[in-house]
Image (cartoon, rainbow, N blue to C red):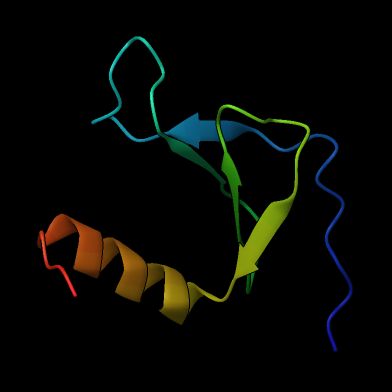
Length: 69
């Protein structure tokens, strides 16, 4: 099992599609090889979901394509 990365200095970014009022957004931190940290922008001190790059790519493709299940 991989050790959890230290995210204390992570530079979080929101999607360029996020509205200026915040809303229901997620933030992503870049620069962590082999893992994509994701968090809820409304709760920055809350839990962080660590996705592998393939899972993140699948998520982005699904959301970007407007697909619904």
